[in-house]
Length: 549
Image (cartoon, rainbow, N blue to C red):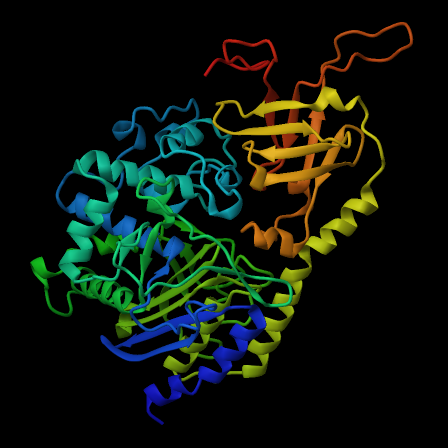
């Protein structure tokens, strides 16, 4: 059977996986030996309007953006305006640290080997709102404690790519969107690729959804909207299967000529440069494999057979089991309302692209992408294994919040707060003052937390242990707010602190609550980041124990 027919025959299996996971729409494309051999679309790009997708439908591609950012760096390096070893502090002097991370380079930022934690909770708010500004990224990279020594571990960090985006702007003299359009999109003829915003006349775009516990897709606001949005250079591009196949073919062509000396030198027609460095392995990943699994610049490298890195529960099914070993370059993208997957195989000029308009109950795009790869290289497919994995992982994702509730209730030791409610009320700031947690008293005399003071990010607090409280919601309640549902239970606990300043005759310690701890970052040891309460009579924006902003 012809390859195109074999790939087409997978359609019903893809539809089953989408149904199980709550993925309403999906578009895919396959490139082999430099030619497009298959494109297909499933479901709806707009559920309410019953509009199907096509190969030109624009999806938010999330972290597939990182390959574009790395490619833009390659262009600047080729022009002599930047080097992979250039230190961030030499281009962005506002970046200041007193440890080894002060010396992080462009290559460190692109490969996630800075040793700095991601701190994604600071920008992940409900309804796809981003309240931090782009200028906050450098401040955050400057103040976060290191999770690991520089260049020793892979720690995914979106703020690192925001920093690279700002380096591109400072050295080129134009904004990221203009550089992207002028130097990559227009030369390659990618007319259905945009940075953050859709053009006014655009109509063929996918609406974003999140899978509810019963696999019903729930529509949420568009993510990463606004030309100057934070982390745009980490995950702000929107594109189509058609355009992405053009981009990935250009990458493969450039790599084959630069590294292997094969193929044609496309010269000025191909703007992509320095693929040898861009695809060079820079840091290993902790994957259970005897073969290479590493990260380059905006790309994960893995030697087949391999268990692809996966942020969902488990990593099976294994990709390429029984096939001859070959190098693949991979990446996934995930945002509230979209997921994406790409795999490149330079030796055969092959690419697989899968885009979906849902953050579903399982990693639909990865599963579909793996199946396409298996068929592309003639491997035997166990359809039952994939369906069972989709079912089990979807059930596991949908039950995370219920299991956390059970854990919290099982470990709960108090029913009333340790101190009067009003002692906890106040606004608590991180040490650089750009993120705050507001604690308010409700009309019923209970406590409620408002992240960044927003009603959309407000949750009731329940007494937990000693001087701590927890906040919680069901899977569907969080999904409908466009919030992640897979954080561990510690994420939902706030621990309040008070100074031991004096002791009265009865032995009771005075209780002026001045701070709270929130464990929102799990690459760091300890009980979490400290947020300090602002004094009610403080007119100079001083926080207890902290420096002025």
